[in-house]
Structure formats: structure tokens, C-alpha cells
Length: 250
Length: 251
Image 1 (cartoon, helix red, strand yellow):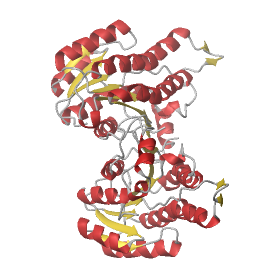
Image 2 (cartoon, helix red, strand yellow; image 1 turned 120 degrees about the horizontal axis):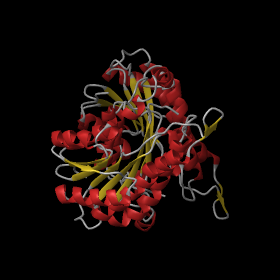
Image 3 (cartoon, one colour; image 1 turned 180 degrees about the vertical axis):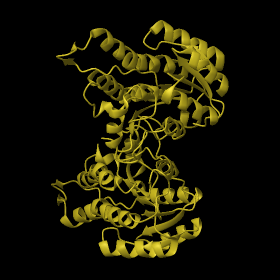
Image 4 (cartoon, chains in turn cyan, yellow; image 1 turned 90 degrees about the vertical axis):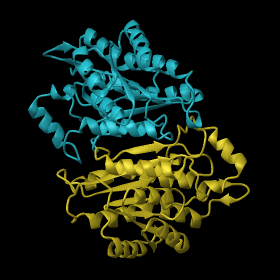
């Protein structure tokens, strides 16, 4: 797909990987809608990129429906939708000192990372279905963000890893559901990237994590992930696949 | 890495997917050395893209060493290696009609697709070890191997081909681990059905049947689309050790 002038919706688009990808897509000519909980971050970025900011909690169906309506009214139906919105409540499933993982934070993480992503796919693809097809009959592309933890989760990330593995698991059936409409579905599983989510981790732990990365031995720059998002949009032969982008961190 | 001005070696670079890779890399500014068994096609491709061609049988260690030395002499040490050379002799492992799969072609497919890929990785990466790093991260080079979706889900008649390509996928992570300390990345691409001479051996009916398994788009991939992925992998340093299926969702 050519990006010039097409509408791109990004959940969690106001910070971290989402913000960097919004920037890359906007620079390539896309009109971006940033669907985010944090309007203080979303509004200035949207303004800078010539797009729109829409308040949205992806775990709340009504909120997502309203956000899709608002974004569509502002910039038209999406050709590209990227589900970045995600949280990580690192906590062991049970430990002597903290007891069992509380159900509330467990539920919240699954609601945002899994349900939020699937509901986003449902509502975004519904908008794409009636669009005029491009070359090859392509109508749109959905990109979901899993994580390296989906395949190789460290301690304290059982809930996060489960939620992200679920996202990776949905890729193929989503692509099968939407192929008749010319909508592709791809998933990206990032390793360590320099995002607000990762910056919450303490320095000692970060040094340890980076020392485990084969090459390059550094955080990923969110822009590098944005470049992969852009490339996926442009290359139609990519469909139904999960790409690990993690500097060989396995 | 920025491809402009770098040397790239493309095995099997004179036809099919390899030709697509050669053209895209040359367009991005790389000096391309084409290592191919077919001298005529190799020379024509080299002329087209302003590169150089060297006769090479990737299954033969000496031939690979000679061709890589010639390429180094002509264009400088390669920073990029793309292993496209591959063959397929579609044949069932046994059948009443044709008997047991003959050992000759069985060995040849494994020698070219699997051993040949590993030989080229070994010699090309060895030559990269002493190169100056290209950037502050210490990147010296990138190896890209071409597997196939047959590595994951091969139809009947492709036990040997599927096994050889699965071997290439299996090598991806340990190759990346071996070479990480030298700043050399290793990536693998598993293409679906592409518009190549290899795929051209299937008749139209079989091609249509195979393409029914592609989700979208329901057409053969263009070699240029695979070349574009090779270029993106070269340029995106965070991609390492992964195998990327480029197959329009082929299951």
C-alpha cells in the first residue's frame, strides 16, 4: 500500500512505540489518528504530525466505538490500524512475600492487551471492508503488537506473556477472516525498546537485560520499530505472520 | 546499515528471487557480486546492474572460496551476503511407480540448499570479522538466508526440499549467536510462491491449486518484493536471528 494520504489509526499512539510509528507514518504521508487515554500527550503530538487525537480506553468497548467514530469523522475510515495500546504489570504469579497475583491487575492487563487488541481489529476492519480496493484488491492492513515475552517470558511476566502470546496466536485466524476483504493482518513482537514502559525498570535490571542482548547490544530505538510498521504497510506479500524484532534476544 | 557503496554477494543472483535481490540492492547503491552456476545469466545480470559475476557451485567448498576471493578482489569484501541459490527436485520419498527416492538427487538438494548456505555463511562471515565496524554499534555485516514456507508446511513430494529448508531455518538462531560478538546479523526469509523459474516448472493447474492456499494477495510474489524485504533487513539493525515468512499468508 502507498502511504500518501491514507488514514492510519494508532491505539496507544501518543507515547513509546506508538508515537514513534505515528511519526514515521506521518512523515511517509499518512494522516494519523492517535487513539490514546492520555490526551495531554496525544494532542500536542497529533498537532505536530497534522493528525487528530482521540480519547480512548481500548479495554472499554463503548469508548473504542466512540473513538473509531470520532476518528473516522475527522480523517476518514482507516486503511492502516496499529494496536499499540498495552500495559505490563510485572508481578510473579505467586510469591511468599506478595501472595498470589491479584485478580484485578491480571484482568486489567488481559482486558487491555488482548481484548483491546481484538476489539480494535473488529472495529477497524469493519470500517475497512467497504472501502474502495487498491491494487490487488487490498483494502487495509491491521498490525498488532505482541512482545518477545510471548515466546520467551522472564519471571514476573506470566500475565504479560500470556496476553502477548494471545495476540500472536490471533494473527493467523484474523488474517484468514479478513483475507476475503483484502485486509492483511501482521503482528510484530518487539524485544527491548526504549519506551516509557521499559523506563519503569530499574537501572541495575536494565544493565542485566542489555547484557543478554546478542547484537546490537542496546535498546531498540522506537523509530526502528516504526520503520518496520511502514515496511509492512508497503509490502503486500507480508500477511498472517509474526515478526520478531529483538536484536536476536531469545 | 546504509547500503550505498557497500559490497553485496548474492548467490543464485542471476535468476528468480536472486535476480530480484540483485536488482533491488544495486538500485539502493550496493556493488553486487553475483555468484551463480550459470555463467551466461550471471554475466548478463552483472552487466545490467553494473556488478560482477563469478561462476560458483555453492555445494562445493573450494568453488565458494574461489568465487568469494574473486568477488573480494573485484568489489571489496562483502558486508552483505544473501544466499538465494537453491534447487528442488519434487519427488515423493517413495512410491510404487517411481520407487524409493534416489540418493543422488536427495544428496544434491541437501548439499546445495543446506550445506551450500552454511558454507557461504562460514566463508563470507569469516571475511567480515576483520572489517572496520560501520557504526558506533559495531555492525560489520549481515547474512540473509532464503528458506521457504516448505520448511514449515510442505506439500507431498517435498520431503527433501522441506527438510533442507527447515535446516536453514534451524541454523538461524545459532548463526546469529555465533556472529553477534562480531557485529554480524543473520536473518532468514521464508518465501511462499514467487514468480521464478523454480515455480515456473509447475503447470497452470497446479499453480492455481497452490495459490488457493494463499490468503491474500492470491498471486505469486514478485522477486522485487522479496528484494525489498532484503533491503529493509539490511537497513533495520534491530532485526536479528528472526525468520520472516513472506508468503501472503500461505498455510
